[in-house]
Image 1: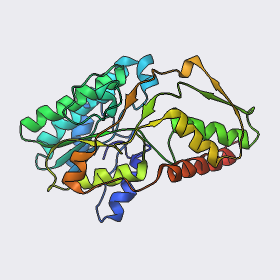
Image 2: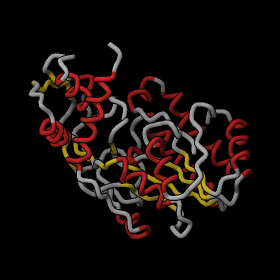
Image 3: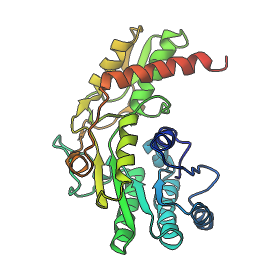
Length: 294
């Protein structure tokens, strides 16, 4: 597994181990931009399955360094696919793509047949990686492409919207910042899942009985970012003023996924209510803020 020490990786590794799988995880110790290192790692592990999580996951970071996003997210995926084809040709390969590859939506859920319309360097690199996965599948490699929509939970960095709100609230509660919460466009609509539900979907997609191809990992329900904030405020003791900041502004579009194909193929459905996810996220940030060096 690449990206084993990232946000999702730290949830997926123990989830797979609890299900009886032996996991060989790599992270920054194997640079996916180094084709030889990737090939050596896969050759040494001799895996039955490969999960490719490693990525530059921040849209904002991709805007400031598009070339790095392309190297890590597209070229890195090519290296993994080539190494799998040469060193572990019988392995199932789970590529973790992104809902960002669909581009902006108008409200109707995207299914896997929707045209790809990426609009950021991050999304374009992920779309290229997704297409590479399809190309290698056409050559006979057993490739599954997961397209997760927004997900959050304990351990997520604060560059993502729910985690950003939770950190700010935890710091306000602790008296570490003024009672003012910085937000972007609260009218944008997104499809949110708990990270624990997402890793369950990934585990099920590793089952060889599940046909290869692309699968949305989504709830099928859109929620405005303002509603997400309301859920966090309900769990918090803070009563901050809410201020819009231009640097955080994003268009008021909608990105919702149709999870029907995943449900039919695996029986998967999200189990964790969003309110519970947000409460756990806020509790995690309270602990992180408390334990942070003075």
